[in-house]
Length: 306
Image (cartoon, rainbow, N blue to C red):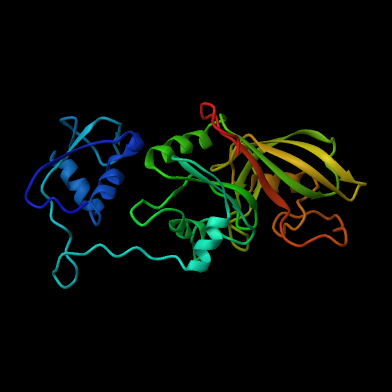
């Protein structure tokens, strides 16, 4: 939306924008609006929701009205109004690749079959990732699909993107709850014993000199930053005592939870170089992490399991 220079504008929150933070909602409406501008206008009472004062972190609801005061576009270094930068275009080869990954799509979400080696989000030295490439899945006038959960770079399988703010908020709440079933398949070194059960306990990110801060370790409940993790598992098939095909159902969503838990019981996932065990790797198997997000069942009023 263009800047509302010199006039007050009153906008209504759409159904697909329900439960969005006010500052994020405004910055989507007025491209280039800064956080400082939003917070200042909230402090002075110029921005109002249903006629009442609001904070930048207030969550707006569908049907509410938002009063936006006259605000000017922020100035660039040359003193001119900043112009919205054109959207980065996705290379045609990457666009074709992204479209080939789509396994389900409706008006609210897109489900991808993520390949190994492709990061979900950017980071240090990572510029090619699903979050950026997902622009190729919608037309030029639509907003970029939103990530609602993550998979490790080397994990394959179902990854969900939301098409609207409202869907992203709803799915985000589902992923934080236990109303959503996630099923993973893994190949483990050795066979878990017993062949079905649960793995539970507290875990925490490593910290301190000489340790991998992106690696989880066992923790005491009383440790600051410790989180409880619970994984259900069942052996589907085994190859003697050398390896097993295991179905995993994480009841909590912790960083590296499945990889950590399988290594903790002495049957690490094949191809995992971070969480290992001292079992021999069978010959003749493909390389890479053997962990696949097989299914995601959403309680979406009769919608499909993906």
